[in-house]
Image (cartoon, rainbow, N blue to C red; front, side):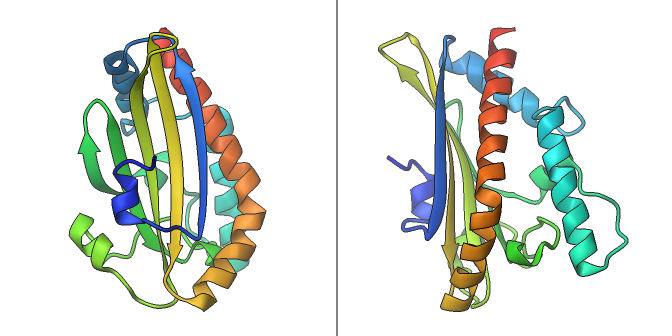
Length: 189
């Protein structure tokens, strides 16, 4: 089950899915997630921030740029809010060419869910990042699923994204696992 994200990227070329069960009600876990997402807040944790910093340094080195390092807040703000069904699901999206190691911001001409869905320019990819919160009948807690879905808009983008995905997917997975662990800690605090 792909939730709302599947309406934006129904057949991804690349993707990942991680989940955990938190022994707390859906509303409590949702509130903890929203607090983690607040700009300037404690965010996803120091290891995640370190991984983003490494990616930013690699991008600046590869592209010869002198701009400041991308922060966790920058990363979150680079994703568009595509859909939200509180307290059950939130879907964010981004259009880009991440394999170039440029900043993780969406195309400036893609500003909402409608434009995201309609975007079809070759050489780019569209990605969704979703969080789903559902009751877990077996435990009485909340099952949290984070899913990333990437659709490449032409074969050139798919090949470039494939190389990039092989490089970053272990780190992306680590980020998701650490994020879920931190969410669990925050929801139970």
